[in-house]
Amino acid sequence: MRLVPFIALFVLPVRAGYGVDHERAPAAERSVTVCIDAGSGPSTFPSRSLASKMFARIGVTIHWRFGVHGCPPQAILLGLTTRTPPTLKPGSLAYSLPYEGRHILVFYDRVVQDHPDLVKSVLAYVLVHEITHLLQAENRHSASGIMKAQWGENDYEDMKRGTLLFTTEDIDLIYRGLAARARPTADAERR
Image 1 (cartoon, rainbow, N blue to C red):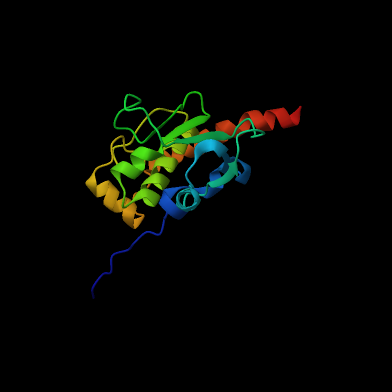
Image 2: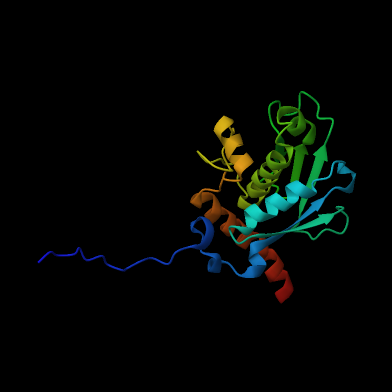
């Protein structure tokens, strides 16, 4: 008689998406508003749609608004420039202010110049990368994935396929950051 190996079925709950427990944060804490400066110029619609899908995979909803006036206090303010001075953060496609928690500036002209065949995808990943910095409230990078400090050839190929992903650590930090961002709002509503 042959013994069949016994496989214990003590399986940890499978986390949907990238290993994130979507139930860990209430729905209100899993969304963020991004207000786009109306004077920013180029259309970001296709890239915003891709960025929204990337965040949706980890249970985060992005609410896009045009215009920065009247934005909620916790909203992210996004600007795009088409005339980036060469001396402003050379080699970068964007920057954010993670400790300030509110502002992102995308160097749209550099995205177009450096990646003319991948503008939609690269812009989407740049948006996600910078929004993530603000959500995590940290100026940190991962060894791989969306939050990698410098993307290489393979990363751009993954962008083209839509397979450049968040690391589990990045997702956990996003969730913690979203919860922290929601706290002041919740405290103010209780008063």
